[in-house]
Image (cartoon, rainbow, N blue to C red):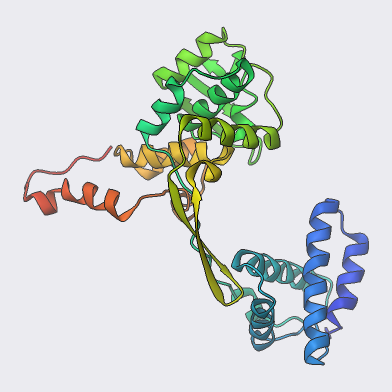
Amino acid sequence: MSQAVLFNVFAEEYLNICKKSSTYKESLQNAVNHLQRFSDASQTPIFTDMNEQVIEDFVCYLQNQNLMASTIKNNINRIKYLLKKAHRFGYEVDSIIEDFNVPDEESNAIFLTMREVYKIHRYTNLTPRKAEIKDFFIIGCLTALRFSDYSRLSPKNFIRNKIVIKTQKTNTPVQVPMHPIVREIIQKYDKKLPIPPSIQHFNREIKNICKQIGFKKKILFERKVGVQRVSKLIPKYLFISSHTARRTAATNMYLSGIMPFRIMLVTGHKTEKSFFKYIRITREENVKILAKHKFFTGDKRKSKRH
């Protein structure tokens, strides 16, 4: 019969044999440290059979430490990961913990409209290296590929006006039709794209490029820190990164009327739930789409969505 053991004792046992990367092991250790400090503060030993109430109290403790909501969620997910391992090691674990979730915080991630994508594409007052970074970004904005994929495109990926590639992150084969601007960029380099920068350098430079182009409108940034919601205005260019390109492509495809399942074949998403986390539509944009729907126009003809 399985029995419970002190959580930190198991965690030490597991981390000593864990084959994960040092970075991931460090994130697990940080979660364990938070839980141990909670245990010390409450003067209550924490065992692997901790119940839902213990986890809820732990969440409250983390909130009182003024941690961001995303950080709290990550810590809880890592504790749950370790509890799954404890169960496999034969220790007693309360099965209800599997269903415990910290609500997602609404993302502040943005997308760029097609007008904004064209504006970036047409901008020419850049150094040669910045122009190359801009071109990579535009390819991402019109293909929905991740940086890890659009930064390693080569002639073998360009087949009859489409891009064919096996994604690096999920090993999923995808095919993407080439937008005319993508064809233009590829032809510009005679199908041999420049050597890409590191993602850190790319993210820094694409912000600088967008700042130079004029993406300085202030956007409301909100984040939950502890139990307080912090709000401040931040220039739009600071929100733009390599991943903005993928989100931009997915959202603009959706806004143009392409069915989600067709976009998912391009993005490689397995579920609509994960896919729709990428779609960024404001209430104003949503009402414009709804206004054209037959329900609101009174048009009895069958509405088309491809």
